[in-house]
Length: 371
Ligand SMILES: *Cc1c(COP(=O)(O)O)cnc(C)c1O
Image: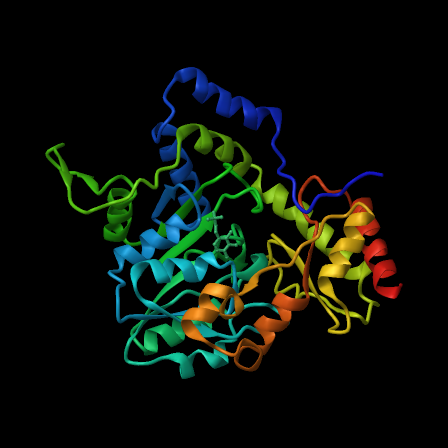
C-alpha cells in the first residue's frame, strides 16, 4: 500500500545544491544569502523591506515588541488559528481578545471585530487562514477608524493576492513562516515585511541581540534583543524554492480544483470557499465534517487506508492554557472556531501530489464517510 503523507516538501537537487554550496563556504550564520532572500521576497511582495528570522513565531514576536506591546494592552486575534498567533501576545504580557471566524472562509468575521474593541485595544492580528486572504481591506479600514495597527499573520499565505496586491503588504507588518508545512521551507524559518524603514531597522536589531550598526560603522546595543537569526544555508535552500513559487501555487490551485469537484456532491462535509482568483494559496485544503462524525475516528480510518490527514487549526480559547487563563465558553462564544477545531479535517495538498493522488484521497474519504 502506498502512503500519502499530509505534506511533503518539494526539494530539488538544485535547492539542495544551493544549501551545500553554503556548507562548503563555511559561512553558516546569517550573511549574504539571507540578504539576497530578503531582497527577493520584498521585491516579489511589493514592499520596501523583507526581514528574515528563525521562524514564523519569532517574526510575530518581533513585530509586537517593535510596536511596544506590553501588559495592559489588548490585541484582537481570531479564535481559530495556529496557537502561535496568540502565544506571542501572551509573551508580551498583553491579553488576547478572541473574535470568531466565518465558517466558509475560516477567516476573521469582520462584523464581530468592533464589539471586541475597548480603550485598551492596540491592534489586530488577522490571519490569512489556511492560505486564503482574509477581508484585509475591511480590517484595515476598521483599524484606521479606531487608531489601531494591523499585523497580518500571513504564515500560510505567501503569494495570496487581494486586488492584485500580495497579502503581507497591507498591515504595518506582514509575518510569514517557512516551516515544512508551508509552501516553501527552510526547515525552520520565517520573515517579516513592511514599508516602514524604522520598523525594519528595529527588527534587524531585535533579531540580533539588539545590535544596531550606526552610520559611523560602530555597533551599539540598542535593545535587549533576541537571537532570532536565520542561517545562510537555510536562506539558500528556501531562496532556490522561492524562485519556483508561482509554479508551486499554480499546481496547488489545480489540485484544489480537483478536490472541489470530486467532493462537490458529498453532503456530509462542508467545502472551503475558494475565494477570488489568486486569493487562495491552498496551504491547507480544509473541510468540516458533519457533526455526526467522530473526526478523530475518520483520521484513523483514513490512516489505516494509507492517507494522512489531521485537524486543521486550534480553537485557541478551547486549548488548556487559554481555557485556564481566560475561562471562555468556546462553543457558545466562538461556535464557528469550535466547529472547525472539533470537526475540521486537513487533506493532503502539496506540489508533489498528483491529480490521481487527490482523486484517491477524495474517493477514500467518500467511502469512509459512507461506511
Ligand atoms: C505555521 C504558523 C505559525 C507559526 O510558524 P512557525 O514557523 O512554525 O513558528 C504562525 N501562524 C500561523 C497562522 C501558522 O500557520
